[in-house]
Length: 276
Image 1 (tube, rainbow, N blue to C red):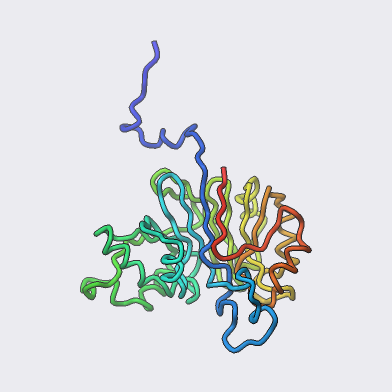
Image 2: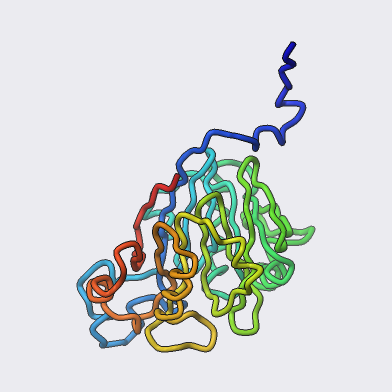
């Protein structure tokens, strides 16, 4: 006699042998902290008419298992949400506390207006400290009316779940600042890094699609260069890889694309992927 277990009594069972569904990724922005074009710059990249050379601050939207997640809310977050016509947002994951990755948090209140619910925010303690300092009106007992309403969840290097979505944080270094990348299913996303330890690399191995920062062609003190990023991608050997957090010093999109292996690309704003 076979006994049918009640998944409602054992919710963890829903995470076992669940049929794989496509994970959709939309690149909200692929630029560095100052964006591309850089204010006042007359270089060929900043003056390019190619829309793929126009880069808002780096952020990504992930749609998976009926949930919509954003990694980082930079200064262009409102513009990105409007451009992509995002009507619902379940959670925000923060990689680190630099301004170009958190400045748009105030815009989460628009989703509060729609859903009448707070937005779940996942961040390390040091990121939470900066959020509190940057948006004091959104925290504490006497929140200002109309300020963003969020549920803060403290994360570390350990796996955590957003409902049925398993998220694996990947520790990386941004010069001397510890930051987090994230792996969700077969997709790994890492920005603003210049070092990943061997132990943390094990978390990335087997990803079908990897997104990695590649700031420019010359070496940089706190970001992977194009050559360094290419070396890491060759080490992981994913089916496809995309570079993000690029400055105007990366070169023209169409010219750099010609020099890359067929499975490696420069991401661009608005690019959408379906990953199984």
